Length: 126
Image 1 (cartoon, helix red, strand yellow):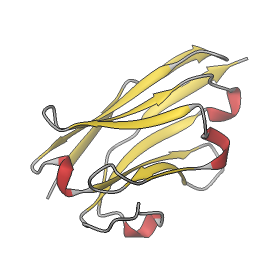
Image 2 (cartoon, helix red, strand yellow; image 1 turned 180 degrees about the vertical axis):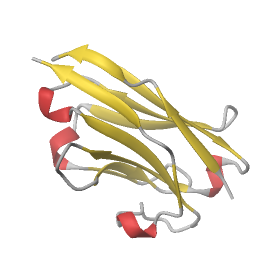
Image 3 (cartoon, helix red, strand yellow; image 1 turned 180 degrees about the horizontal axis):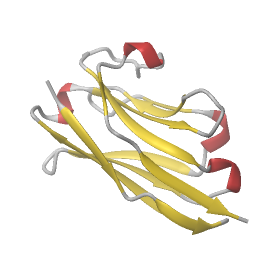
Image 4 (cartoon, helix red, strand yellow; image 1 turned 45 degrees about the vertical axis):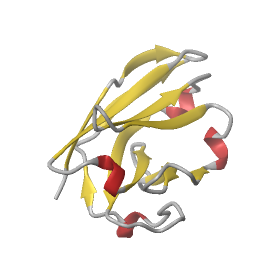
């Protein structure tokens, strides 16, 4: 079992950057496929980016391609989401999630993730 805690959210102007962190405890993140989701008010939770357990295969949703980057620091047992060139439409609560699988492919289905963090708010002003 793994516990996930997000941090790093906040208020930023359009064009700015934020780095979200997802600190894991209980098990190493290298055992999990990881994903970042977001949920805006009145909308469904959507996948933003996901990578497989080794970080060798990554999926980026079209709206964030070229702007967001997922990375891992196994020594710190933490996964990061670097968000650049932020837009007002990126405003949402961001969640990290873990799927205990050694598949070579990123986990794309929300229902496949086993563990979730509590979320961190990102607000982008115009």
